[in-house]
Length: 306
Ligand SMILES: Nc1ncnc2c1ncn2[C@@H]1O[C@H](COP(=O)(O)OP(=O)(O)OP(=O)(O)O)[C@@H](O)[C@H]1O
Image (tube, rainbow, N blue to C red):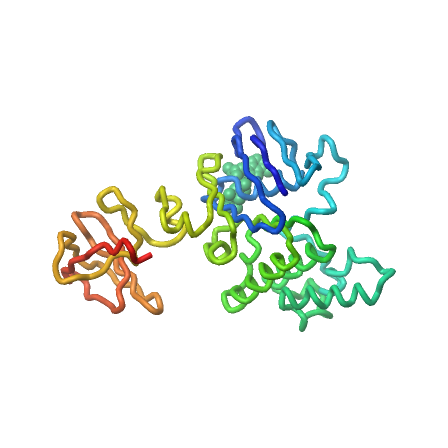
């Protein structure tokens, strides 16, 4: 288990992370979310032992994770970290990069393991390609596979699919997260993308104002978003009568107290997102068809429609 206790960290004088405490059990998947600059990447780096803490402790099982003041070499064998900037070896092939840290003394095992990981990151076809000729997304996948090569007990992933196109992203995400679960590898993912969280994360930690605002199951937070920051992670929402109402919870009805005027319709695939004006405030709702500008409509809140 990863145990973070009252962690405070600052680069200079002002703390970027204040009094952070949480646990991650073996095999658990924890997502770290928060606005840009909220300290997600910093938290991962600190967990990896890249910096010394101002206060607090980090433990993996019984071992304290310590920063450079105590460790000549940063990092631990049981932990891998995939940063946003991946430092691969450009002049060797994809499979050589992945196999780099695997023992040469067991060539068959090395080959098998490399093939397994190439499959997980969907790069089998590129095994013999030199890394310098790959795209950003392909390089990101090599970095992931390389981190998994010597199976870690815990992996820290910073925006792991940010460079990967939408065609590949869904299946790759499923493949990588399924692999981590099957191997019981604890995984901490910093992300902006709700698709990395919903359906995969056991817990979601929201960083705000340098602290943990909430730490709970994504489903619980989605169904009962206590703050606009949490709701905004899941999608478009409105504040109506001081309550958070997702855009998809509003329905057009024949008559109601919520009378709005359509200002814009955005095609979103299986629905349209409609921007409307209600009491001089902008409001968003989802509708099955396009609505003409200046159409007057009435809305009702379907609280059960989550
Ligand atoms: N090496 C550094 N030295 C000084 N300040 C830093 C350093 N790295 C980050 N910061 C500051 O720490 C704060 C948190 O940055 P961090 O990169 O952890 O945020 P983030 O939530 O990961 O952001 P993003 O989502 O944009 O990647 C920011 O205010 C940033 O400017």
